[in-house]
Image (cartoon, rainbow, N blue to C red; front, side, top):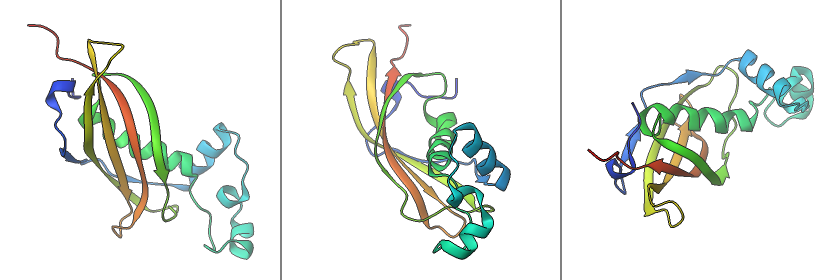
Length: 152
């Protein structure tokens, strides 16, 4: 398994995820269609040219959130997570555009035992996504219910 068990994390641990992703118009279009989000801000180039302060379509923020967390999975929770418990403090300080390349880093903020599930622990991650210009485009805190190492 690529993911780490609860005991293998430590507060302050920083992951610079090697996987990067260039976001395409197709990514944004399909995601917006699949989630029934018809916002012109995501889909209508002419509307954005005339009425948006950005002058171009903005990538759907829910896609940005999913991509940011998804990139982190291989290094942190793949095969060792029981469930996501929540996402907090989700922020998009700058927009993401078609053609931007995203890189992600994750930091372990907190570790605690699960009171209701003694065979699991809870890890609080801070995820941060940057575009190719090193501009922060998204961040969140994620609470993950993690497996403990199996007994030997």
